[in-house]
Length: 119
Image 1 (cartoon, one colour):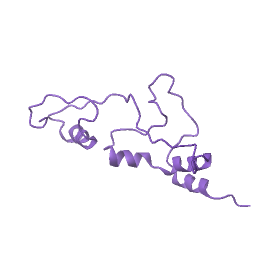
Image 2 (cartoon, rainbow, N blue to C red):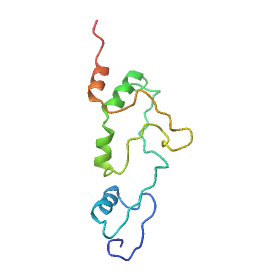
Image 3 (cartoon, rainbow, N blue to C red):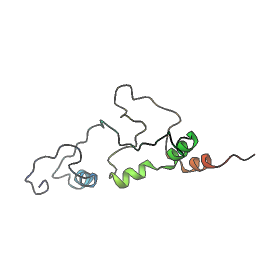
């Protein structure tokens, strides 16, 4: 309906797929203006840290550095989001702290963290 002109606007979350929004934003610029707001919530994967193997901090660090969040965002969300580093969006009150070390994708670091110590 939007492409045929019988619908003036699409508002809200989940109305269009990420691929549809990306297509409108990049390929339909003569007919449509796409405006995205700052996130009001993050999409997250929750890890149960009370049960093995994720009860071990070292294992959680390996997982964090082994997951390429950017690649997932490009493939599954059409590149429309940015990796989340915390439970709440960075613009939420008291949520703009810059944590170090950064939990970035680093497969080499994940591999090294996962290696047993050599004596």
